[in-house]
Length: 257
Ligand code: NAP
Image 1 (cartoon, rainbow, N blue to C red):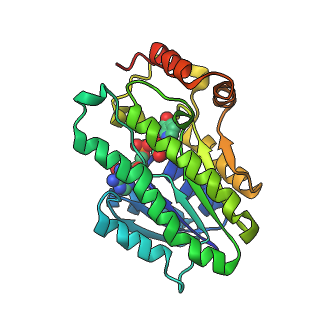
Image 2 (cartoon, protein in one colour):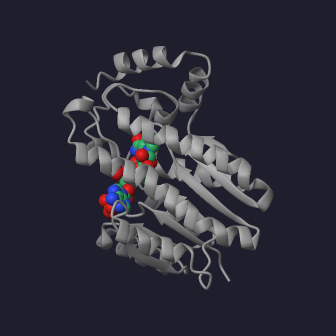
């Protein structure tokens, strides 16, 4: 039987690239996001290449809809071998002026849904003695940034959570991988209202580069994959500079507020 991978945020961007790449590597896929039509189109494409593709439309910030996906992950009759927690979004602006409900939704998606889905997937993986969880974070998780306070906070959670779990589960045959992309050509910037004009052209990556590199890192049982050499250099620099200085620099460079 082919292994199965469940990908959240699979309707577009990095998640769709993960789904395509996993199918190409021989996985059946379960696609999760809100946009059913986009996922059906992708599923058709994947089925045409000989793999099974299931579509679960769900708003992961909604507890009832999230539960449907948790139930799918914990269904012992249909084991999920790889979980890709990719769905996420950002918000940009002065924190006190941001609509509070949107900040709240950002934490529910980027943090709570990721934590709950990981919790639903792990018991079966522990029982089977194998599995993979890929948590899509961001280089924003390594450095505070004025104008993106909530987003950076959510991704700092993903980094710490994933690296802790990597160590906790590696002796169980399970790899928990934290993926930290930098600027990637998707709808993310437009949805976040993020001014990306300061990002130099050489720093941009494609969704496919991020997904393919992540799956190679998962094969290598790595704990952390920072995608792209400019991002690797930026993350390396964060290990040496004080966080207050990093926040000052990132505010000056990004000019988001
Ligand atoms: P994207 O093109 O905006 O895709 C985001 C995905 O998340 C979509 O499939 C969207 O699908 C899904 N999603 C959003 N809200 C959802 C909700 N409430 N419930 C379920 N699914 C939801 O952005 P992307 O660049 O591919 O982002 C993927 C991940 O990479 C995110 O975690 C993001 O923070 C991270 N990341 C991106 C960049 C970048 O520069 N692009 C950099 C670093 C990290 P629906 O709208 O159909 O629900």
